[in-house]
Image 1 (cartoon, rainbow, N blue to C red):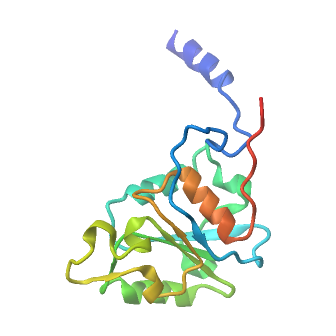
Image 2 (spheres, rainbow, N blue to C red; image 1 turned 90 degrees about the vertical axis):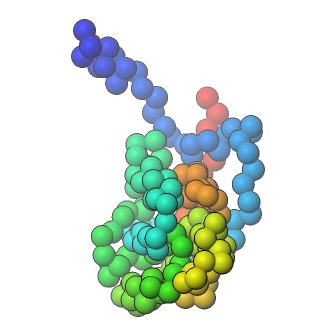
Length: 178
């Protein structure tokens, strides 16, 4: 009986064909997205995520982008385990003195042209909730050039997807009316 209910639920599940949550007017407005668009990236783009030492809130939201609901690959993005194969570096977490050489090494290993996106309050602001603690450098801008900043603690998957699309110069998809 359980398998029959599971199969019926699986067959009746909705198919997502638009940008999730964009048509919801009741959604709270987020902070402004600070983006410098780069028109060089028109097709597929490989992402490398680098955690500077965070609470894993941003990482959990980034992992949701690979789920069937958001389907990051639908927009031409793929995740890479190595910065040598990546076009875009997603940096999350607190930027500490110990992480500065790691971030610079990852940035230098990336082929040209390359983009860096700061994700979350810790990387976009002066350390977020860790501001003022010894060893915290502050914003990612002081370490490597940043093309986009996606604010939030943590930012929602919708905000992440909109920020990634804006960073590469692509418009966010419009939600379809049903």
